[in-house]
Length: 245
Image (tube, rainbow, N blue to C red; front, side, top):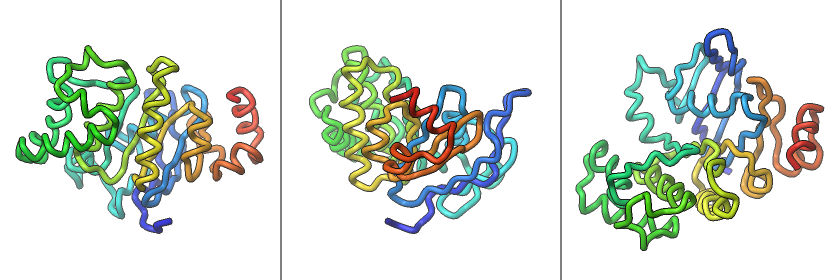
């Protein structure tokens, strides 16, 4: 495994009013790591992801990306987001644009890639996610699983170094979950650095290098899948897994 640090979080705190959502979070993710964040709803997983993508402003603590502490004062956040791609529960595709137009939007507008280059790369990405035949289709003609795979292709079009996934299958019908997880497994096998908030425990066991269990805004336990699932150390972790399995 690479020793290169992609993300480091030190003593990160975030509150919404009186609700303290993230409490002294410390986290290190190295190159090609696949980290799954698990825990009950409301434990702070999605807020942590949003802080890493600067969609939420931390109260205090540090977010260090590829060796540099990132703040809104020192960095252009849009440029940071080019390195840190994010896929959400809901797909947020432009309904009035075809699949390929959705994918080339950011590379042509933000990276100033030529349309021809962007289209060529978008077609490669559609092949990667198994949707090369859907390039000229509008989102309303796609299933939920297909929309999510287009959303993944759109995030990859910016050639990020790190991908964040916020419960990417939770809005899907059960029979569509597998196709999205398969796409993510392939990314993991290719060495993409990924942090994934998920309720899919079988998937987490299969793809994660390590799993982080969060409860009430804190990291309670971190472990490799085998020890995490088969021999959790903390009582809270055991209770959570008993409820989930």
